[in-house]
Amino acid sequence: MVIKDELIYDFSINMPRVLVGGRMVIVDFVKKIILIDENNVIVSCGTRYVSVCGKNLIVRQLSEERMLVSGNPETIEFYGSEE
Amino acid sequence: MHKIIIRVEGFDLQKLLSLCLEEGIPLWNIRILGDLEITMGLEAADWQRFLKVAGNRYRVTIISEKGLKPLLRRILSKKSTLIGVTIFALLLYYQSCFVSEIRIYGYERLTEREIRESLANAGLYEGCSKSVDLDLVEIEMFRHLEDISWVGIEYRGNLAEVRLVEGTESIATPDLDQPCHIVAAKEGYIEKIIAREGKEAVSQGEFVNVGDVLISGILQIEDKTYSSDPENPMNRYVHARGEAFAKTVYRFIYYQEKEKLLKQRTGRSIPGFSLSIGEYAFNSADFLWPYDSAIYEEKIFFNFLRPIPIQLGINRQYEVDLIKRVRDDQAIEEQGKQQARIAIKENLPESVQIINKSLKFSPEENIIRVTIMIEALEDIGKKQGIKEGTDRIGKYTN
Image (cartoon, rainbow over all chains, first blue to last red; front, side):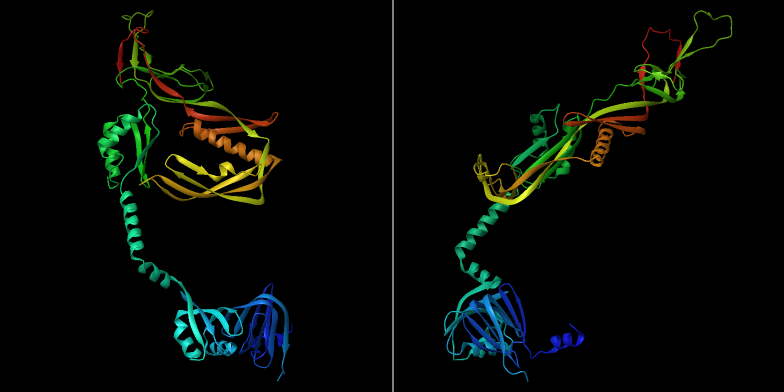
């Protein structure tokens, strides 16, 4: 990763940032909850949307624009306009 | 730390979560139970802010509370339990103020009965208060029992442990005004003789056996006059004093294992527990030992002597594979040196100077024989009175 990409990664607070490991998904820069149920969590990260689909999803933590989702995540989608 | 678990019912629950996010109210463990119902946890400090955010659109119910504050509230609300626990704690404290058992270690010539009587006279007996001054008890012990050279008392809970060392009988040495020789207490090659009183009886390099006179207490009077009988010379008897240093050799034999046994844990283990009440003891490990070889580890949870002796512990048996490995030369040599140090510490007096030491390793069928030879320089002289009648006593001086 070049420096420019790293800076964009660190400071693009209106872009979605997702960290996935095992049965845990961490979504940063969460601005708004669009939809939440046991199999689907959709959040707005400012300019784009992140959708986590799976089974038995539980939001372990929701604070300071960070959402920790555990369960059995199957797909992660990004959509929305990139303005 | 005070957390509240709540249930929220209503429409548009995601909107409530977004508002909490905006207001900076941290939420934990959000579980979606249906389209209209979720449960979640939040800090009690954020409770009022959350109610303001939720408004009248949602029905909020507190399911449970966690943390120190609600725990204390729950405990304090149960008055009878609180009184019971307090009484139990007071009883425990009260019983911990008394000595319940006395154990005595280190006696050989004295009987346990004598020591216990002496302790009781000094104020330490089973059932007495632990506030008794142990220093005074020790002083009283020294007064009552003549043959002890050291005594130490310490408390381990309600148990008083008394350790004592009995004194050794002093070797009778001749009085300073009585004539005596200095004789060899052990075999050796004489290195140096310093005769402060008396006459050297051996020379440097000479080998002496036990009992040989090293510094004689009999001095012949050289009389030049004709009045004395040359056939029967007069002797002067003195109390011989001085040092006789000799090279002595000590030989010790120790043994070592040829192979070492390694206990490698396989990763499998089985838990168990032990409970003993009075004389009755139960240990699950006595009945349940599924492994051929295992390591047993136990952790005692509590051990009380009063009001009833009770002990509870948990244990675990770890399965191990026993692997035999031939020990390398370096490890054998290291242990040999350690054995030499132990031999010196246990068998040689502190005043002895070590000149040389050598180790010889002789492998035998299953063991290794270690021969330790130590060459030392030490004062081997000891005083021995001169028997009457063996020589004609003329005059002696100090």
